[in-house]
Image (cartoon, rainbow, N blue to C red; front, side, top):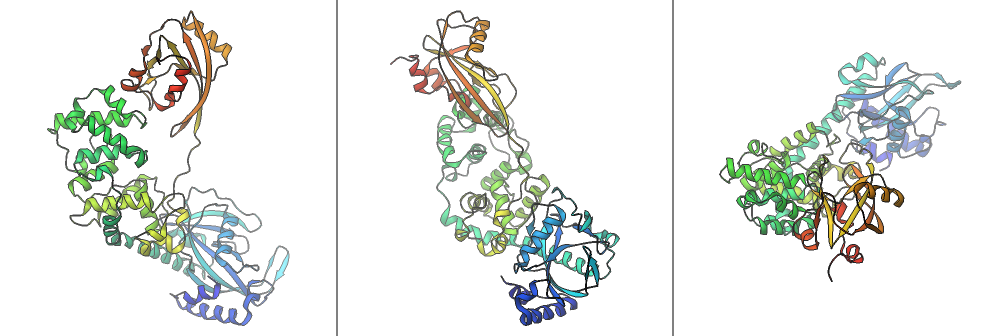
Length: 544
């Protein structure tokens, strides 16, 4: 949008803005692009930024050397006609922050500001006017800040109610305060879009909902099972697991009576095995303490192992038609974009506030459909990583991120910590057609599962031979080695595996044949990478 259009579309809120709008439009009409250069000595275009934190109670300002006062960031157009870009670039250069999120692509205000005669960088500058357009931005207080020595001597987050203590330019304080109030007003107006979500999503969901097995029955056992499985796992992967699990344990009573090894075996390949253990624990509690019936309140559901706020919300709304939001990453992404909310969705306080605001607009007797419509929108349309299918979105008319082209910035997430790497040497000990397994005792996500024998570090073959002798393996033959890696949420395993043929079983291992590996022992995917049929067939460990 060009400057003239930006100014024409601006609605003044003060007399100064009204007069400034008229003057800037007159100057643009008379001087055109000449007004974007400092060589226009009587006056020229500038752009400034009002930068607030996501909570909207602090403003980021710089201490200007020229004015000896804290003030907004900004600078000259210097030939650039895109004044939004000027405001953005100057804010970054003057404060050191990297991530700025626009409140709007429209201007907050327009000011014709007089500049007194002064000396800058050793040169005399005559009195003139700045024809300034102001833009609004949101920035995290966690961003690193630094001064720009040739222009400022301080960069500081200032509490809004203490602004007058830091800004000594009396004529600027009303301008800052007006723009701050306007940003707060704009952000509050965006929240009203919560109320319009049901009308936009419910009909769309009825026509476009995917045909998923857990949607055919709103029984809390099935809803609970599906939601636990869907945590950290793709829908297309879960479908087969869900159907197999229900076939084995069609009721919560059947699950409660099951052996844990059987539960873990059916879970094998889904990962995050604590989910399976908590399923089993919760089933036992519901059968023992609730006579096999799920508690029907959000608060009671939260008391059960493995059920957090999201899962409790899903069960409460879908199975019991309660106005309780189920707020996960998909839903938070939808809400962040619809309302253009730049608060970090990884913060529990933010999650809770968004959930509470959603709960207030839940439609009577359609709570389950509304919950699932939000999930569906996030999973199929409002996609992550800046790739939403906006033209297919039923809520496009009320989406502030779409209006301001800020989808790529939302939602705001915490910076991911670097994933650690662990090196392991893994052993496939084979004897008489069976493979050695041991129970994993190390604390962590795989605790209590069956694993291949292993040791820290990636050992060379000579070191492996010494290690095998220490284990008491009297007769062995190293057949081959294979490398692989496996990525968990917070750690990567780099592994080298040695396939070792042993004349006799040894040690305290469990020795499992092919059928036992397939049906009885739950071996994590990280280790199953070394147990393919081809790997073992090459060693002639299984009967042909």
